Length: 184
Ligand code: FNR
Image (tube, rainbow, N blue to C red; front, side, top):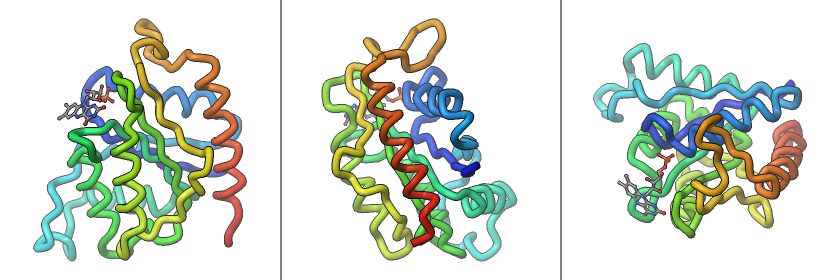
């Protein structure tokens, strides 16, 4: 079974994006082994530290390196990706450059109408940069951008419950599993 590391770009309790990641972990448990790779404990990236990084950085890099693919679930902050997520990607882009050629799919949730579209576009640019060069799931129709979150997540269970959104994600996850399993 494919091992997928999930990076979640929000640290807040009750984050919709974390709720989406946990919904996916549970819903696709028979298809993939999805584990959240915690970014909260990472220090700010500092080039002076990169050759001898603290243990939490090493553990994070090893976890992502060992995964067959990466899921990035992120909110949009000020029309881009949150700094904490960029910081995590900056760490991943150095030393062994563990994202090069790594299959990646992205997703995002917003309470508003735009579903993180601007953050997703920035994220695609970041993922194409020389130190990252992730193998991104081709975008045509394969984008998970969830708007109006309050209408689609259950306040009690803290999970995505909107049926048509879930079916949309089912289809994309199947494509990602095929894509991540293909070594080319
Ligand atoms: C936001 N939010 C936001 N929403 C959006 O659609 N576009 C944006 O540019 C921003 N900018 C922004 C900046 C900052 C600093 C914060 C804290 C918030 C609102 C954001 O989508 C909302 O808080 C989400 O609920 C954040 O995701 P989580 O924490 O629920 O996963």
